[in-house]
Image (cartoon, rainbow, N blue to C red; front, side, top):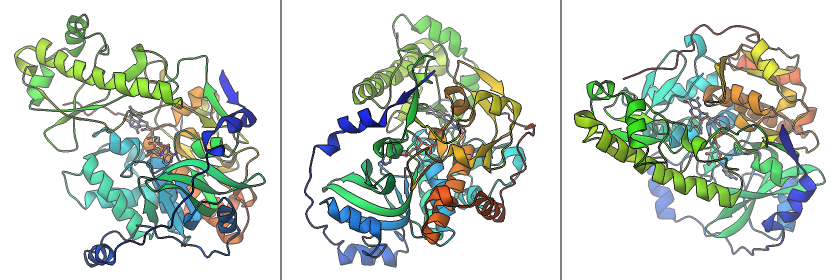
Length: 490
Ligand SMILES: Cc1cc2nc3c(=O)[nH]c(=O)nc-3n(C[C@H](O)[C@H](O)[C@H](O)COP(=O)(O)OP(=O)(O)OC[C@H]3O[C@@H](n4cnc5c(N)ncnc54)[C@H](O)[C@@H]3O)c2cc1C
């Protein structure tokens, strides 16, 4: 059962409503720095203020808020994970003035935090999925074998190449971007979102937009705008995980150890360690990443609650060290010298709030491979509730109604926070699927901005035509995916 959060209650407790922050004037970037970046041919995507003329109604709305306007865009994409990258590339390729903003210092979301885990469903059945998916792959491949190893349907990346490959793709399509910008509220006119409020080192500032795509994973923009959102309150939510990167160990040494036995032996001394875990090679390199059940046996955390999120993040850091110590002390000759190289910059979250859209995708939709007249993409792979349920599903459509809020206008969502039940959310969380819904949302937002209408008014057939032009096969729903193997082993 999912709790549907009442927008009225949530809005009245949002701190930014009672906290007025006055902004000073935004200092102009130094000519020397800009000149250097231009000369070096980089930084093309760094956004400047006034991407739209001040005559745009959304710009006027932000001025009325009393905060300085940082920028304005036709399409504003919030959150630069797999969904946000899809949305930004999809929108910018149409020529729409597109701005992608991200709270971290780099793009990629969980794909970039997670130290090398597979970006699944990027090329299901080894076939190109869209020009947007392929652009990202092309940019990664340009850096050679160290950057990416391509599997049956997935990419195994070195995340530091991935972070720059995303910039390369954004620059190619002329998408502007900001990192270190966290959305903390929305600008609205009536029930229409006209922009966002971002937290920066200079305080709160506004960004105006003709259409906004919420790719925060947590439906933050929808929540701030007062749209209805859903959160699982009865069944256990999927855990959050701080992944590890290990070195100074060989494939032979890894294969020689039974990790479950090791964990059983070490648990009395290291109580936070999971039941077991595996080491997998990073792209084509000589170090290894570990994904695991994270907070699953430590407790249920609401990762939108600041107190619970802090607890989960901090206990996970202790857990990572306990796992490392367990391997060094209980892994015998093989693992005694294994080294911890890195953990995620922040805990990776699998499940939080989801939008309540015009349609809510269900487990049955995923299991049976349902198709919809208003399809704007499809999801493939496993229905993976991270230890609570794991089944093969059919490829199934995502209707346009599942990325549109029920009542709020000017807004679309994509990625893991689209309108779906708790189980159906788990069915679509593979990153290639998130990029696909992002791609569609970006195209729809660009069309709405160009026509001066809200996304709800865009004809679905026109979105479908644009998707087909971008290489998306919209007739995949109902099919069975043959090759879904995810295990690369060591
Ligand atoms: C531990 C873990 C392991 C996983 N393993 C796999 C796997 O092996 N293969 C696979 O394909 N999928 C895997 N998944 C699932 C997959 O990573 C996610 O479903 C997917 O990343 C969701 O994409 P997204 O773009 O919707 O959200 P995210 O990847 O969560 O990206 C959201 C982005 O928005 C930014 N953001 C959030 N709030 C704000 C805000 N208010 N303002 C500005 N920016 C904001 C975040 O910093 C982030 O960059 C895993 C997930 C986790 C957590």
